Length: 134
Image (cartoon, rainbow, N blue to C red; front, side, top):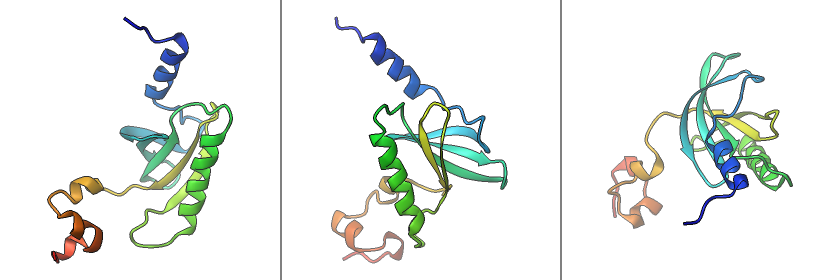
């Protein structure tokens, strides 16, 4: 039987522990999802009294490559304005070095749930809410 190294266990614990946002204006409320680079949490913006979604880098990033990718993603999204793109409200870094950005919290189904049952060719060409199927 193979065992995980102490370093691997420490990384797993770090990834599973909720990030410490006590030095920010955000209070984490619940975990929403995990992806390749990090996790998304539902949070409360205490300054503006609204729910927000926070995307945060999953673990410490010694060389800064993932942090730069996440910051670049936030900068690009923040410059876009379209009804189908969730706006970015804020970005920052936690004391442990992990970067995050804050988005409007959009309630609803995930895209895969929303498109369930829609034919693939229509999912790419039709607006699912229109009812127009080729």
